[in-house]
Length: 119
Image 1 (cartoon, rainbow, N blue to C red):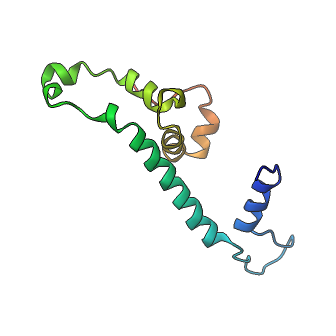
Image 2: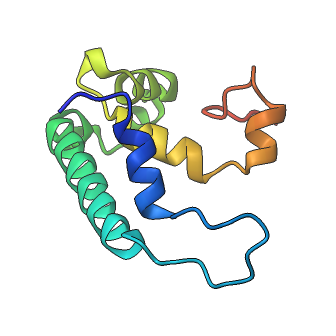
C-alpha cells in the first residue's frame, strides 16, 4: 500500500485528536496496538540488519592481539555500518542517533555528526 495519507492516519490512530479546550481524557485509540506492532517491526528490521553484517563483525582469533586490535579503524567500521550500500545497518544507526540526542540537541547540532567525539 502506497499512500501519502497513511502516515497521518497512523498518527491519528496512535494519538487520536480531541476537541480544542476539552478536559476529557484522551481516547486510547490504537496506541497500545500500534506501539507493540511498531516495536516488533523495529526489532525485526534491526535483527535482519545485524544478521547481514555478522560476518564483518566477527573478530578472527589471530586478530585478538595488541596489533590486531590497534589496527582497527573506527571510521571504516562507522562507514560500513551506517551506509546501506555496504550492507550496513541503517535502521539501527538511525535509531541510535535518535535515542542518543535530545530534541534540542538535534535542532541545535544540525551540522555535527555524533559518530566520533574527540576531546
